[in-house]
Length: 99
Image 1 (cartoon, helix red, strand yellow):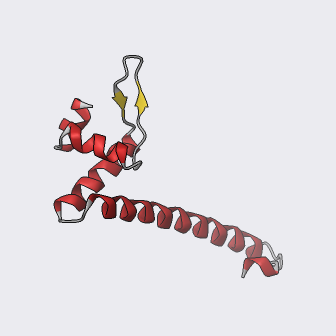
Image 2 (image 1 turned 120 degrees about the vertical axis):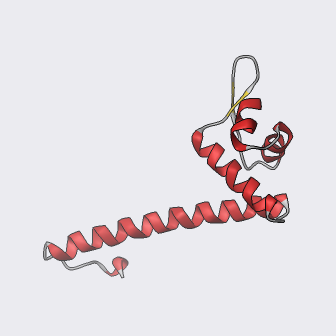
Image 3 (image 1 turned 90 degrees about the vertical axis):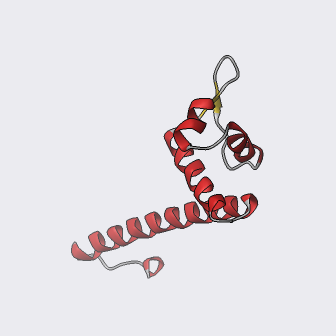
């Protein structure tokens, strides 16, 4: 955890607080040390950014969760549009579910 904190320019206590808030659930080494994925480090960096700008930790966690949900919804929407465009360009009539 110390090296992850150093990479992010934060403290191990801050990373533990993200774990306690259930924003991050790092893997554990055989020795019990926390192991963060690159994705988790990006999330932690975003949390640090929000907290540094005065956002409370619990609010920062909620913001990050909502940002992640929005990104997922946008990806699904884009895939549905691609699928619809493939269907209409091949001459198929879209079903009513694809409005």
